[in-house]
Image 1 (cartoon, helix red, strand yellow):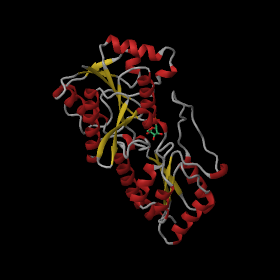
Image 2 (cartoon, protein in one colour; image 1 turned 60 degrees about the vertical axis):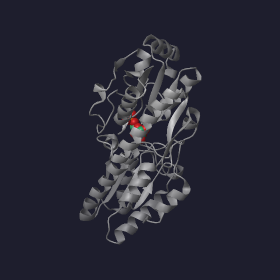
Image 3 (cartoon, protein in one colour; image 1 turned 45 degrees about the horizontal axis):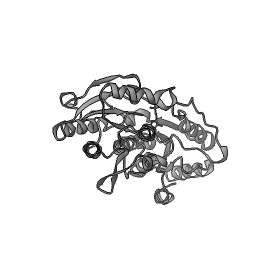
Image 4 (spheres, protein in one colour; image 1 turned 135 degrees about the horizontal axis):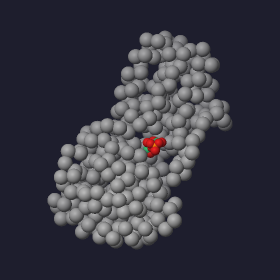
Amino acid sequence: MRVGVLTGGGDCPGLNAVIRAVVRKGIGVHGFEFVGFRDGWRGPLEGDTMRLDVPAVRGILPRGGTILGSSRTNPIKVDGGVERIKDNLAGFGVDALIAIGGEDTLGVARRLSDEGLRVVGVPKTIDNDLNATDYTFGFDTAVNIATEAIDRLHTTAESHHRALIVEVMGRHAGWIALHAGMAGGANVILIPERPFDVDRVMEYVESRFKTRYAPIVVVAEGAHPKDGQMELQAGEPDAFGHVRLGGVGQRLADEIERRTGKEARCTVLGHIQRGGTPTAFDRVLATRFGVNAVDAVADGDFGKMVALRGTDIVRVGLGAATEELKLVPHARYEEAEVFFG
Ligand code: F6P
């Protein structure tokens, strides 16, 4: 059997570990051949491929990014895109496809599966917001990077009596902010699921200064204030309709300075959270996803995504994987709130 592999959406630590596991088990155990498609859905859409065999995946386990490249190309938005993908896969003699990605990439995978293509999905996102899996790989690495940054920022906050605002990724879901904020002892954590009250944030900040201890505010890029209490900027939408976010951290820093008279600085972690080597947890999870995805192909179990449930890897329908985002539940936020102020 000839199996195509692609990685779509934002890059994520652990992608290479999945690719390696798929290829090693696929060739070594199932006797498959592989075709790598470059840059997410752009690869099958434009027929852009690369060699994907055991030598091609040597040494990539600890490497960040993806050897296949990635993009946010949405073939559904391209005229005749689905037909072109079908024709190209047939042209390359590809019998099945493993798509590694987040809600957008897997949404396309689901659509193609409905159109009769033999697809298996692997969930990927540092945001950890895919509902059908307990964790996605990349999240643990992102949280560790953000936590280390918060630990380091404490030093300057204390020495200079400044409020330091750390803006982390998380467009719709505040998982990175919640975990890194809890691990790093944040003064307050602001997430997209809970529109925040600017006055309340100022109270937390002031109360921390009163104890002669400088505040660290952790804010997810998608967090927003209640009832337009603060203006935020939004950029152009991408092919999946997501606007480029950013700016809430700096706006908060300006507001804190204006209202409290204390110096406030913002650090935007941005792509640092997605870069570099995956943690051991992410390498193991990604490897397990990879070997289980290629087993699903061998079993002919298409239209599925591999997922983590407890400590087991299971298969769920691609529909279930992409229907709903996994948001931070109220109770989880309440646990963190105990430490605010
Ligand atoms: O989906 C992962 C993610 O890292 C989000 O947290 C973030 O909003 C987005 O990607 C940024 O994407 P890009 O690198 O394309 O700007």
